[in-house]
Amino acid sequence: MAVILTTNYGDIKIELNAEKAPKTVENFLSYVRDGHYDNTIFHRVIDGFMIQGGGFESGMSQKSTKAPVQNEAGNGLHNDMYTIAMARTSDPHSATAQFFINVNDNHFLNHPGQDGWGYCVFGEVTEGTDVVDKIKAVRTTRGGMHADVPVEDVVIQKAVIV
Image (cartoon, rainbow, N blue to C red):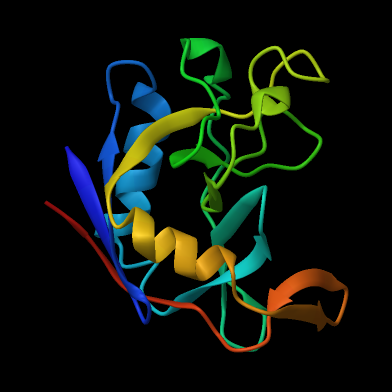
């Protein structure tokens, strides 16, 4: 199963791994089905690390979310370049809607990580790596309490299951 993120920079196709991360994939798909990701932004962009989205609309307006999903980071998938993983707080089981695409091999995020859990990878970009590369290179600034916010919005116009 796959999801296409249509952005103002182009399309990103993500193949999901429901076998290794069933709860995480179902959580992500539930947000896609509900239209949650439509008109959200990549609000945190750090070249050499990752691009993060799924939680904010333009103007850094945070969207409400469902209950957190159980962390499945011990599934054998790694935070390699162009994989997608769930963003979370310091609580290992706090991931809701926000996700990030690795733009580097970020092995320090792998299970067990620095906190015994790591960050759950649940898929990989199979088309549109050039789009990811364009996004990772955008200029960033501070936006209120947030750092690494793109100067110009990088918008996920819609997310669809294919």
